[in-house]
Length: 386
Image (cartoon, rainbow, N blue to C red; front, side, top):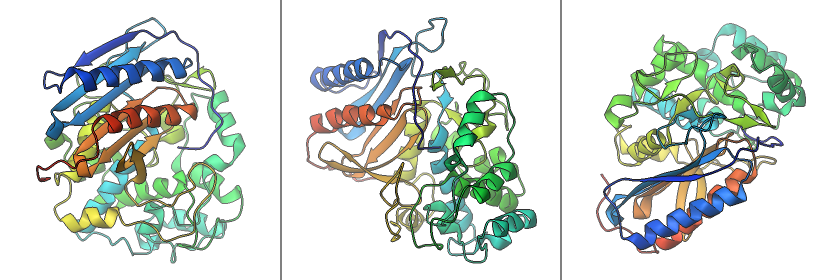
């Protein structure tokens, strides 16, 4: 879920950092902590912020938090899970790539045979041809599909009726009526949750499983230590996980809202920043895909024309290009102020979460990450990647 006009609830902040024993020298950590304090001061509407910096070849393994997890004043910690929103797309895209590794589909395959007949009929009713839209078009947002979030009434209803249970086909139907296609398949980049809702259906039909078990069957949750990650309302929360941190949109506490407004592939996962960082690192360190060519396919940049609105720049299927200080990186963000990036040359992974749907969160996250990247310098890490 992406581009909206956001405001957040105002909740007072207090700093409470946690440091993992494997630390670099005090200078980088103090700079990180100062950058976190500056982020909190810049986002006074955020209930709390969690950050993580992982650069093992530089001896850095650090995470910290500031603010509150709930209106009752519980201190926010890095162990509090939260709705990761569009960061879910990295999991869905990785699972689709795993299906290609298993020979169950091809990225160049038209989606008609991979989706339900009623879904194909619905797409045709909006002027889209499922014989021309491929799996890759959905993954890299070049299908031409309109987004159901393009309809202003959708978000208004989401906020006014937070307990409403939405269905996937209902959301796709909204996208069919909101306006004409952005372009022919492959012609133009435009970020659309609708495409990932369709990919969620592809996952379910290709595996014969509901989406939560489908993701677990294809991705090594246990092997990567993703013990605090689950698809909300579609599978149970892991035993012993902390209560979710409260998250806000337009001044509304969305914690008790039905997650179906963003559930069927474009969002829906609940996780911790630690789990997200482990997942990103697992992808780049060869622990998710069996063939290195699979990762290369997931990082192939779309050649379509640039888009507009929330994301101007065409992006690969898995991640979007990011700049962290002097380093070229790849990452993904989510509605509630979540941003995770990985910088392969120095084996650096940074996570940031603000728990508020405020577009300024991403600028603040970028400044925090710039401070981290600048401290680590420009020399690549010499140890080989796994």
